[in-house]
Image 1: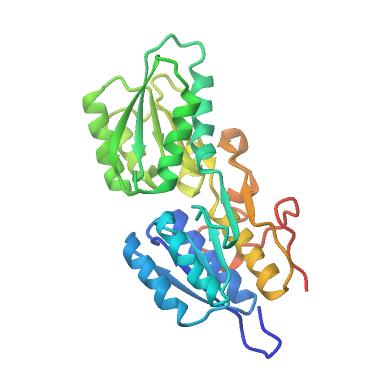
Image 2: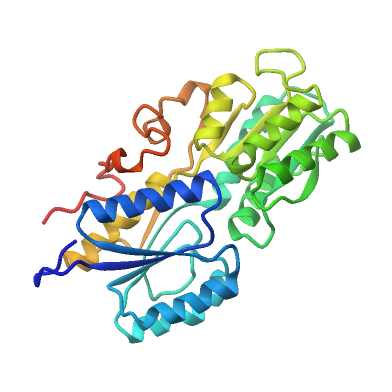
Length: 324
């Protein structure tokens, strides 16, 4: 990522926050990849404050970077800000949570509704012959998070109108394990005969499994009394709990895949001047114990916290690896 004059390309990345496994892995892997390619990267953490993120974007425009990469806390508000980058000739790339603007140069992400629909399908299939009622506790990330709302909608769509499925919703847990632990404890207090837990993110997995253990419901998938537990992300905590049997599985929302594809879009368009697909939708596979060797989450390939040795993916069906 070096210009003809020998200076590095600069990418400014706007993150909502870097407080959980998904976001911290995405941020550090992206920074590592850009550095390995010879570029410069500045990453801004909004600390989950959308006003702060928009102000940071305005300030960053003055630096005239070669590109922006954005995970927006308020996608609707960003629609009014993106034209300012366009006027300055700065391409804007977007990942995971989409900004609905024709001026976005390239988007990469999983279909957020499918991320909820996939575990919902698993629940429907598991309880196909159960007359019900099937009592489900849904652990919210945060309703202001577009991904949370879409995952909620997808899970609801998978359950359909079958009255045997009864869903109880938790308070917003802000993707934090401690809040999820309290939400599950409260859920069992209110409904001791819960059958299913659906979590909108595996960022909360440690808290949920701790709550299952504290309430005496930590039975593995092949044991009587097992609480069906499904989620979203298939990051390391979810993979580990799936391997151990406490979790049935989760839909794959991969920080590695998001960052790898976004970076390839940036290099192809900005550095090489070649056209790209404006929207790349990544698959939302359901990862259970039978699929734990799926390469994007295999800890042998992506050892925890060792971002500088995580490989660049090679998946030409998604996006070719750019070649000079």
